[in-house]
Image 1 (cartoon, one colour):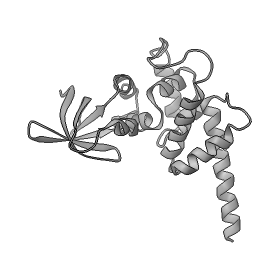
Image 2: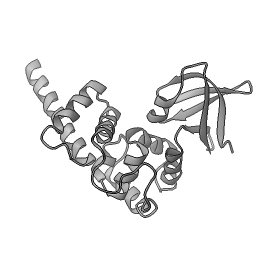
Image 3: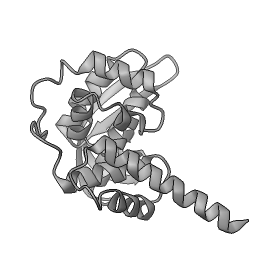
Image 4: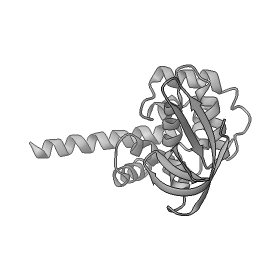
Length: 207
């Protein structure tokens, strides 16, 4: 079992990177948040890892954040949630936001992640809410998340659905104009509604 990897970053791309250690290049799958933390190619890098062995493949998953690794281990223990789906969840929501969504039974925030249906979201809540009952590092126990963090998480959820960063930021900004203290789930829902209206308006003009 490879528990961590220290070496030189050779290259990075959407969802993965290559790290050279002792003359060997390791392909490591990473979330979008870990990818953002990676240095430039040619610089030293350290990632905590989980090695997942399947009949047809051996895959390394890397994490810059220990909180993200802890959540990954919990997620893949849930029936129907494999490593790739767990990584999608960690790409759609930052660790503290994902933990809070599960504890708070925010189904809407979970199903906003590509590949997560309502049944899977409900299973995550049932299986993990008690395990995340203790304050998760970085989580806020009272009230909504700070404005900047909710905005970042909402934008990440929308870009995970295929919208551009510009579209996502504009929709989230407009969604919060009248109520800045919206919970993450409601913020994402309102932003999606605005994006849907924009798409309908543009389609009408194109006719």
